[in-house]
Amino acid sequence: MLVLTRKIGESIKINEDVKITVIDVKGKNIRLGIEAPRETKIYREEVFLKIKEQNQTAATSHYFDPSKVSKLMKDKIKK
Image 1 (tube, rainbow, N blue to C red):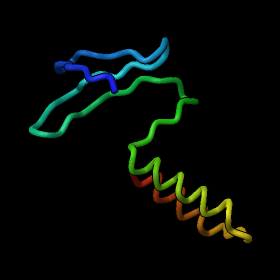
Image 2 (cartoon, one colour):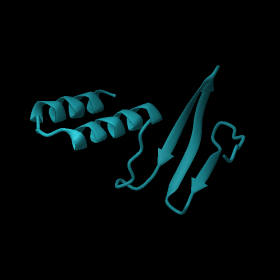
Image 3 (tube, rainbow, N blue to C red):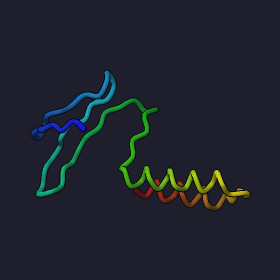
Image 4 (cartoon, helix red, strand yellow):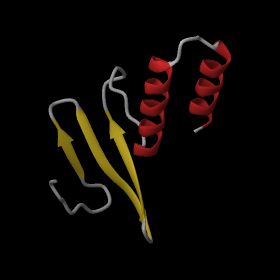
């Protein structure tokens, strides 16, 4: 793992098309701004892990329930 120290307003670059900027620091909370192409999917880790788990469950399920997809999308939009 690469560990960096940045101040408010400072950034890091990932490849040519992703820029992460420290926006604010309050106590133990840090606000980050992320600039990336629209096609780049960016999730908080806990959301990513839940999506991954649900994808694995869906892949092993033998039936399709559209209401679950609808609920997942509504939950994702709320966050």
